[in-house]
Image (cartoon, rainbow, N blue to C red; front, side):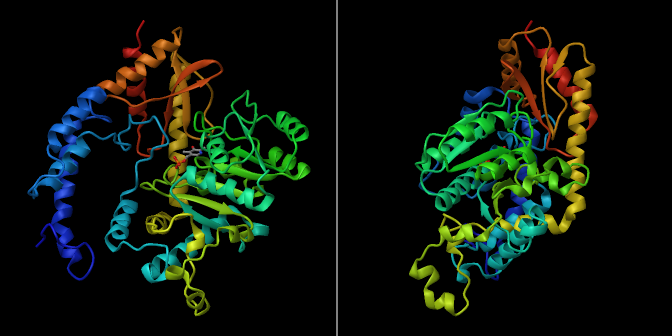
Length: 459
Ligand SMILES: *Cc1c(COP(=O)(O)O)cnc(C)c1O
């Protein structure tokens, strides 16, 4: 039914895909079983050697009909599995099966969002979903006007936010960010040729408003202040209302990087942690973090859609004026990319399948797990807890030991493929980090994780 040159779309697409999907699903299952844990065992050199052996000749003279099975099985056997309960290092979420299935449809149909004639459904779906999400983020005043752009993630969203700040306030606009801000922000300032950013201390892990006030008083403007809702290291949320007030007082533009924290909006229990979010001119969201999407699923929400006129771009083959006048939507100004995947389909399917309540429940579950893990650490005499979690990140370390021992236990567990923990330097010490994003993790898994760390810390 399927030959190497069968196509994924068209009338025969589904028939060609079906047996291949069986192959892929079998290979995924076999690979996961061969791996046996969250990460392949052996460390980088051994894993690379096994992948090289399995792949063999990358571009053979004659094709290999088993390549799909061989490579997917190898890929799965040597991947980090974010759905494994002991894979908790990063903001690397296990994607929902529903979203993944939707993404297959997006891939098969392959719409490209650079012109309407390549993506009629995707164009309208993206318009609907981005407006709805922007309306949820900016309720009240800005509702109905706010918009959002789809990005490849927080990095691209932060870049766009600074670009819009530059186009609104001029090329002398200075980025003012906390010492806790994501590295992509100063990098975007560098990329855009903005003045040297001002870094405001974040002694307790969150941006200090008094220090921000001083920075804004001391430096020549204009400014774009970047606050964080959900720091990468500790999942902390900057004091957003205070920061918003200071920005208003100093006439500064405000960007909030909520790549991690924005998912709290889905939860009735946790939403109030984001109070003040809607004061921002622009907001970064990553639904491939607290939104359970396969990569990539970033967004930049923009309060005033007039800001987006800066992105307008003309290319006769994609958005000729007479086509636009005739009613063909102009998509080119919605991204700096040209060809663009319809990442909106998996997002739309997820939002509609789970609803706000379903997503809110997942958020509540991972936040509950983080509290349970913090309790376990707190009550264990062999461990030190950094702090109670704000979202779903817990920093901890074995008690009475050195930073070197903390670093070593993390690498031992990585190398053995038994647990994937992150690391964060804070308060002058190195901590182990768990970022709990798997709603199905059980309390037993958390106890097992702690036991593994205990048993493998060098003394
Ligand atoms: C993850 C993250 C980013 C970067 O997002 P990508 O999707 O990895 O590009 C930016 N800011 C914060 C706070 C993040 O947690």
